[in-house]
Image 1 (cartoon, rainbow, N blue to C red):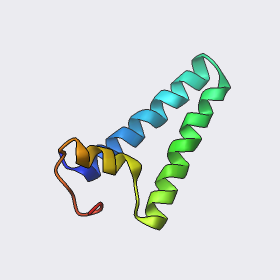
Image 2: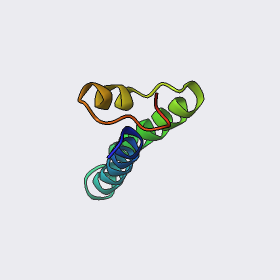
Image 3: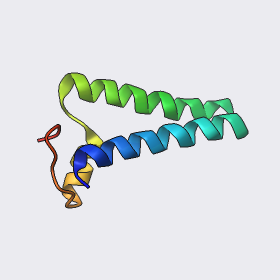
Amino acid sequence: MNIDRAVMALAGTLTMVGTILAVTLSPWWLLLTGFVGLNLLQASITGFCPAASILSRLGVQRGCAFR
């Protein structure tokens, strides 16, 4: 798995977890979903993704999107 796929998997997982927690526990969990969405938007505009930086330091193979 490369960084591109790992970032998409992480974002998808956090979005689903935030949504499920919002439905079952508290609507405040929608802030997590909103944060993930804003981070994805920011990464698409600036090219900087904190999750990609962390995964790179952990030794995950680089993909074509985050160099």
